[in-house]
Image 1 (cartoon, rainbow, N blue to C red):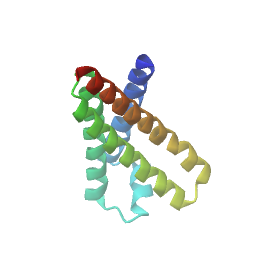
Image 2 (image 1 turned 60 degrees about the vertical axis):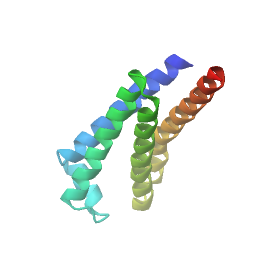
Image 3 (image 1 turned 90 degrees about the vertical axis):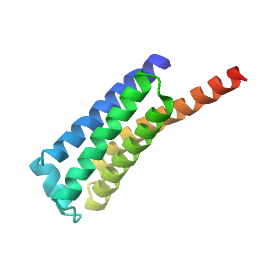
Image 4 (image 1 turned 120 degrees about the horizontal axis):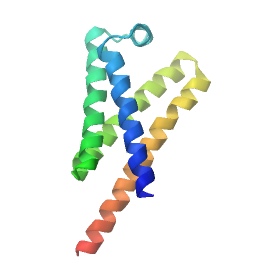
Length: 126
């Protein structure tokens, strides 16, 4: 299970990183989509920076065993993906919105596994 979680963390971190980069460089599709929801250039850039920062926290926190940092990163990644999914639902693209919930579910699984591992480590230390 540990190797599956490690692989999920790499995939989710890369997905968040690339989604953030697309927003920071103002990819035309991203800008057009987000401007429909009243995001200005600053908000789009900030959203992208948050996604990049969250990906870094998740991956570096996990692989360098800073568990609290990794958990914070995972929560921000999940929230950013969830926001995107909600916006896609609101835009009316229901099939794509359902598919876009997959990274949210994977990140939730990562958070749950981190929580379980933390409980196991806490119980063995007492």
